[in-house]
Figure 1 (cartoon, rainbow, N blue to C red):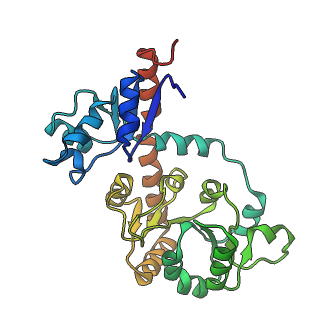
Figure 2 (tube, rainbow, N blue to C red):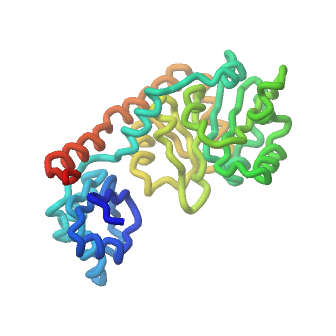
Length: 295
């Protein structure tokens, strides 16, 4: 393999890979980089790590905090704030939305909650609310869709209907379980409120922008601090973090009972996504300016 250009996205930095690219004089760009003071780049023992960053031709970072960290450690010479390319990606996906007629019919005129990328810890917080609110349509799209996990989710939320059986079901239950992959980004379009899983695990939440782009208020668990977009949306009022089922149920009741609150939160989420677009264009302009893909 002899690439003309390498785009290095976000978190992991492989020293020998980058060293080889540098030796071969192959340009490398860091895309959507984000830095925290706890990383070894910014420690007294981080000499080797600093060398890694200096091997990049350009560091496109997500925010001013990351750029300031680089400046404080004299690593900023090739760095610029571009934002996160995920904002452009989710916007592009939303612009190509295609109706899922079975889901549209399932939702009808009911209130709809779409819970995406959920794990066992997320499911446990939803059990009581789903049982006590049969008038609401719930769509659960678990992070893992293997047969064993789908059976587990079915046991957690009886009675429910599988998406794979929906076409053959004349009277589906009020809980729909998605047992395939690739549809989640479309499903958020049908939500009044979106829930994104992962926030009860150490690794943290999954992609909340997939829901926010559709002007949907987003709820997630307590582990979200390392995700800039989650912090920003909580501060703005377009997203909400809950610690337990009681907080979840109180929040949902407030959102569903106060239409103005619901719509405003969704609007704040959507506008945040639109305001942060543009990283992809900036990176592509740089590639063209520097003629990095010309022979």
